Length: 87
Length: 152
Length: 90
Image (cartoon, rainbow over all chains, first blue to last red):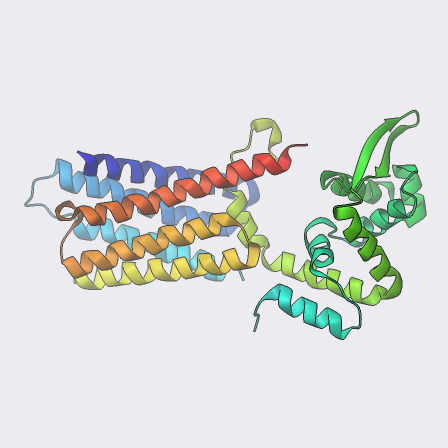
């Protein structure tokens, strides 16, 4: 129960951060914010798919690669933002 | 290579035979960020009892009223000058606390009078620093919840 | 293959944590310090997952690491907004 609530809380936090960053991107046009927003979209999807994996799908289905590769894509976007767009 | 920025700045400032102490350096980095603000602050600091209109400051600094107004507003936001509503419209008067930031402004005025070039060099270095960190500040400012009327 | 993915996630989170720390040093904005801590904790979580060789549901300490990482992000946002309101007060 606590685990499920934690994943939901983490997903909501990431989604909130993504929303703020995309809102900032809409206002300023700074690409850094778009890439960082994509990172938090990846984090959100990681937490959502983790929830689905642990709670909704049977043990025979493993969504490990779905969620971790989404998280990894997000991290690559963040690193690109922090290195390339903040020169 | 960039080690402690403040340490490097102090060493360089001493090499120029002027002690820009850390308070003055901070004032120049954080609160007095361009030449109009510096000139306006020192103009009002020179006559602390006098209230100045935007037009008077613009004429004294030989700049346009918009630049003067913007500089005075910035200084007022840091409580270095105070906005008063006089008979002749809004006026600005020097208001830095003498036992607080006022002492730093005194030292800045002295440094500007004795070695203007060093102060100008410092402000240029600060401008470059500010530009370098502007992307980071954009990221940080994205997380501020703004009320609709505050949206810029 | 799982270990490779855990490893790349841990390394990318660690690099992000270091970059946020660098920005904190340059700007002195606490938000970057909180984000650095958050991504540092995520790096720790992915590393611990790899060392345990299994997923989150079996180890509660992995859950705690993830929770603290996101609490750090929430703290960053709250702290930023409180400071912004205080500095904007006339």
